[in-house]
Image (tube, rainbow, N blue to C red; front, side, top):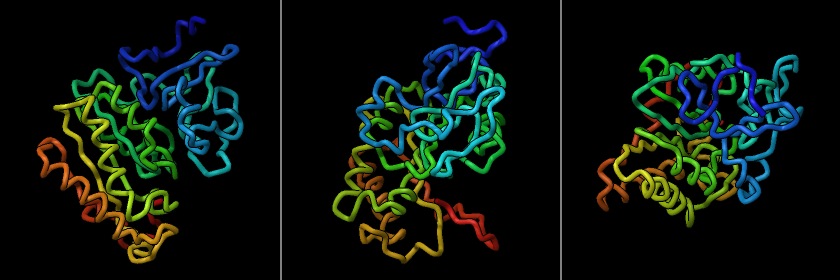
Length: 266
């Protein structure tokens, strides 16, 4: 099916495109945007990561709805693989992320990256940064679902990039998806999968932001947030020691700006 002439162009090489998505598929006159490879969602074995929103998405004429897990109601911004539907691919204005940028930035993370409280995709902090710097943004933020899934690592590995940032750990802590025995190795493997496809691209790993109530509170895997941060840091430090000079660590604890506010990351 050919999209209407007034629709934005959503191909991977088009200019002026919102690139918080990886692919489009057509379904009965609607265009379905995806933030993970649609041909692989069955292999993810992570239903909460790849399921659609409650009403199949928000397009023209559809109400702003949130899915049952509280993911953002951004247009084209549903949780995980399925990002909602829109007729004619017009749910987001062209150029929302800046477009035509020389630096292709891929960023991955939790709700901190998805920014589910923002008014829309173009108002998230990654989009604001990309627009200001005229970078070409692909934003893979998965509220509550940043668990180092292999399908996500492969998606990032296959995406053209000049800069990759990975905000890791806060959802792992929340669900206890990895423990002391497995977390550092999982972080290392995730990064190495991406590095194998992007041997010279700078990769920035951001450790969990400060969350005072969780810093010393054990999660279901018997790890405190301090433990999770130490595991992420240790994995990155070890890879750097073994020669990955283009891998960088940002201690997210140094970036917290929430003093005097009740909100904490999740």
